[in-house]
Length: 249
Image (cartoon, rainbow, N blue to C red; front, top):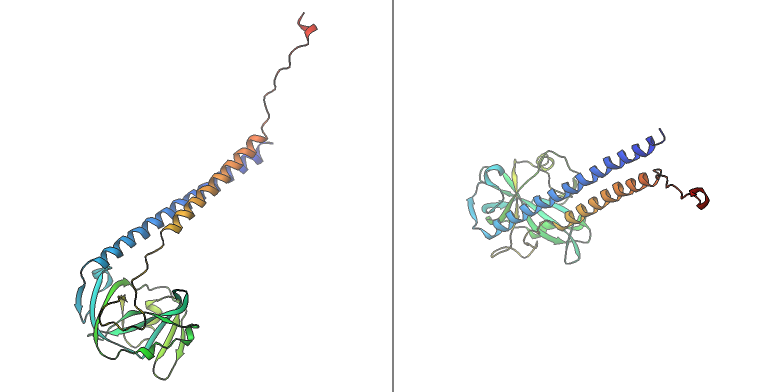
C-alpha cells in the first residue's frame, strides 16, 4: 500500500499530460483552419469581382468572395468598432448600413478612422449620400450571441459603439432587416480617402504553433517529472557484499 500514493500521482500526471497533448493538437488544428482561411482570402482577392447589382444572396449561397453591390449608405446610422490601430495611431472601424433594392440593408466596413477615444469618432462627417457601387470582400455576419452595444446619439446620426459585429444585436436596433453578410470595402478608384480603406489583415497562424509547442513541452515536463519522482522512491536491488577473505578459506 505504500506505493499507492506514487501510483495515483503517476496516473494523475498521465491524465494531465494527455490533456496538454490534446490542447497542443487543438492548437495545430486551429492553425490549419486559419491557414485555410488565409488561402481562401488570398484567392478571393486575386479573383474577379462578382457584380450583384442591387441585391445580395444569403451567405450560404455567396461564400467568401469579392463582390460589387450597388446601393445607398444610410448615414443616419454609424457603427463604431473600437480597439483598432493604424501605424500606431488609435482609431475605430466604421461600419455603415448600405440600403439595397428590396429594403434590406447590408453592413459595410468602410475602413479606419482616427480617434483618440472611440466615443469621439464622428464618421457622419464623412457621409456618402450618393448611391454608388461598393467593391468589397464578402464575409459572414455572425449572429446568435448577443453583444454589448453603447448608443451614442447625435444631431445627424445615431452611433453604436461595439467591440464586434453581431447580427441579432444590431437587427434589434435598426428599422430594416439585415443581411447575414458583412462587406469589407476594398481600396480602389472612386473610394473616398476617409475612412481609410485597406486590404483585410490575414489571420495570425504563427501564434498557434508556439502555443502547441508550449503545451507539448508542459506535457513532457509533467509526465517526465512524475516518472522521475516515482522511480526515485523505488527500492534498489540489494548488492551482495563480498565475503571477507578469511571466510573464503
